[in-house]
Length: 208
Image (cartoon, rainbow, N blue to C red):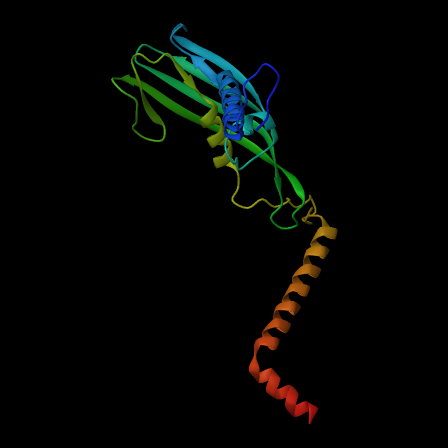
């Protein structure tokens, strides 16, 4: 514990909870940037544009992507009965190549649509259709932007081939990985031989 003049003594737990509160509130404040208040909008089309990078991905716990450069255009079509929201995302995200472990940029191009109906209480009727309570006045699009980016990524992240069909992976890194794998295989084989009693018997015969 520590004491500041004219202030009460604070325990480690109090300090921890205070900084957790500051951290969470900071994230909540940044999430507000992705709120769309539709109650005050006229019926018709409305566009919202977002620049997405590392600060955006840091809003999420253990994000699958940590950095990138993307432009997202969210188009909201409002009517008395529902909201139709289109998400158009283009750019690149930073990742690690699964083959050579080198840094790489993965292109992203995604177009998705969500439907928001109005009802008594919130419910998710499907992945694309959500019911919003009548008293609700805004939606936050951050989670959908994140999910649409993640879903658009390939399962394997590998450097593409060049125009001649040659891999653009880091050749030096591939060589180092091959050396490591060969060394690891030899070490495993030696360990197996050490643990195998048949090798001990063979060595005794050779040493006679």
